[in-house]
Image 1 (spheres, rainbow, N blue to C red):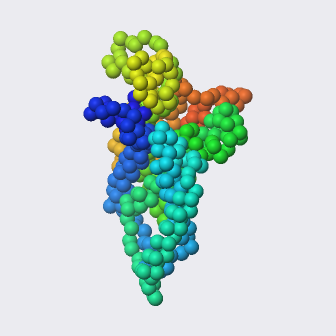
Image 2: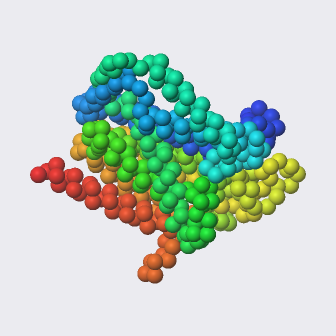
Image 3: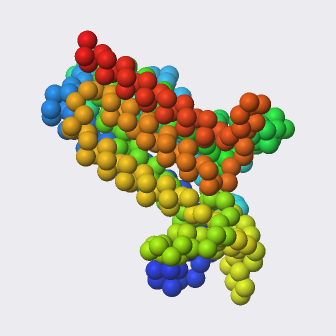
Length: 387
């Protein structure tokens, strides 16, 4: 496994692991690549729909020569503070930060004096630039923006809201996570661990839906455009889980590999050596920072989800021009994604929630609702198209 970039470089070039490149964690790197891949696919679809007249351009007004607003000063203050607060702390506590950058970034640890200085410097620079570029008579300029040029904004809105949603939903995954939150709410919220993918998707969908609607982009067409992009991003993200060994693996698989199995042995059962959680038994002769593997092989479910998600993304990509009723492609995405997640949960390690009359994981309950929502949406859109 590759807990961080230094282990990847070790396999490629033979360099020693646990060096300066350890600051780049594999899961975080693949998470960024997941957003980039999703954005690329989304841009292709938005551009196609724009050229076919299904999505129109938006007209935006920009005021040139106006002095910075209070909102602009606030954003600059916040940016300067965060850069100073976290940046100086990272330099001072580099060894601690390198062990878990994600947790370090989202923790409350930092350098307060540096944060205050950074905030003042950014505000001062904003004031200087505002005075320098200000005009006696500010001019309002209008520009036409095609929908594909909004991909970066949509991606950032989805990324931020998705992380917030994933963190909030992770709190309610089990009684243990809920208890941990009540005992240490600040530490839990600002910890880099504990993210529920479905929570991220749900919250990101709601926020992005409102964002595109506010900018007068037909949400139904954007939903269709984003369907294959979501599956591509999910596939890349799950690859990060597989490569880093972040614990999203399956249950123990001690069954004998069947005779018909033509795939690599590790796809049947895998022990995740050098996993980022440092979980399991020690690897003999290893003196690196990550020297453990699972005592028993498990189902490598992240790679299963990567493969299935790429196949489903290909199906949606092939059907995107053939499904002429707006919104049905997104409905199909909901159904396929829900079915995939429901069945993969049967061999994944997850906390079970007991509702009294039924037991299941949080993801199983949400996946059932996702399938039902997809079917309901399909029926409504089909009937509407016939009326």
